[in-house]
Image 1 (cartoon, chains in turn red, blue):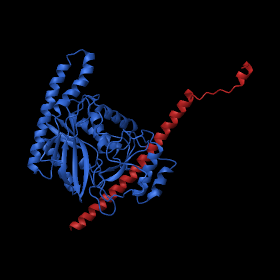
Image 2 (cartoon, rainbow over the protein chains, first blue to last red):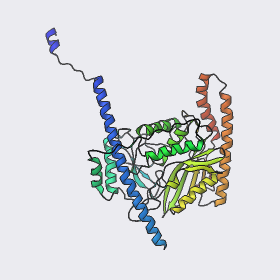
Image 3 (cartoon, helix red, strand yellow):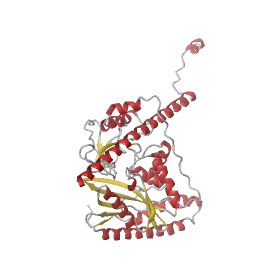
Image 4 (cartoon, helix red, strand yellow):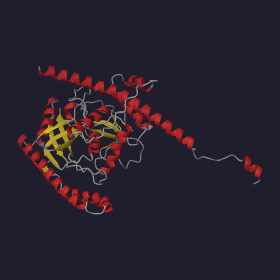
Amino acid sequence: MEPACRKDKPKLNSTPTRGDRARQKSAQQEHKQRQRAEIYALNKVMTELEQQQFESFCKQMQSQGE
Amino acid sequence: MTGPTSPSRTGTSSAKLSRHGRSKSTSAHCLLRCAAREESAASSPNNGARSPGEEEEKDGGVLFYVNRTGFPIEGVTWERMWSHVAVVHPEGQEMADRIRNAAYLPKHHVPSVPTFKPSMSVPDWLVSIQNYMKALQYNHTGTQFFEVKKSRPLSGLMETAREMIRESLPIKCLEAVILGIYLTNGLTSLERFPISFKTQFSGHCFHHVVLGVYCNGRYGSLGMSRRPDLMDKPLAHRTLGELVAEFESSYKRYQHTLKKVKIGLYVPHDPHVFQPIEWKHLVLNAARLGAQEMRKELEKHGRDMRMKFAAVTHTHTRTQRHTHRDTQRHTHKNTDRLWRNLCCSPKNVDQFI
């Protein structure tokens, strides 16, 4: 191949660069942080639900006992 | 522990139901496991309130999911978690969307991992560990975030414990036992052993596990549960029988009848040990044994464990006379061998099934 053609030949570089890897890692970290925030928000709601159900069950058992 | 009438997930036919171990799954998806889980102290017939005590794969259970693919949680597992809570919660999808679509969610503080200081007493250290676990919170989402296989070598489970600390997410009772072991490793004056409970409520069986601890003639426990009196107990109980009786008494408050108690052996402090935790060295059928007989067996087991520990410690001291390099190799192998030799087959008292 002539040198001119070689210069025009596009680079087939599929290897991620260091910058790409750092960006990927950062994106992954953010994704994890968002998941963690959602998990704790969800856990708060589900904990409250469980507590409500437990209290209403206790009341039910108490009234049955009486 | 989920109650027997918790909402069932009949729409999850695409999920696999697995009762035993999951490591061979080729699917990246989490598996659905039938679990007797811990929730409210008792379940009401209609609203799905749940009962305390929790483990896995047992009757009277409610389906729950397990994340097997690490972090960040992959798509299928994540979506399944949200689908599950949308079914369980009265506000359904609206609740789920409110959280998922929130532009801003408060960042839950990452609790500091407790660090042992020489000036700390053992009880103080246990309180510090328990506070850390409480700060992680009990996991009510219906999806277990860390996969714990009880048959795994201790070294592997310690890696899972490190992951729990790294990811800092809510945990359930079995995860708390593993984490408790990890955080008490090295405190050689403290012995740790699993205590598993099988209870019955309204015709259904429920399972739970805590980490029993023993130090200087006193027993206590670490753990996580939906109910505060089914987890940590102070190092104040003179005998193992007393500690178990305390749990039984707590269960009675929730109208749970204790059916079986399984006591494991002391867990080695060496985090690199290859052998698995011995979860059920002593199995007691509480339904068949009287209270006194149970106490007697538990106290005997406590004495046996202390004697076996003394034997292992003595032999371990002898192996330390090797060169440092040899000791590294020998310590792990010898510790494994010694524990295997001392672990006879589980003692089933009164024809435990």
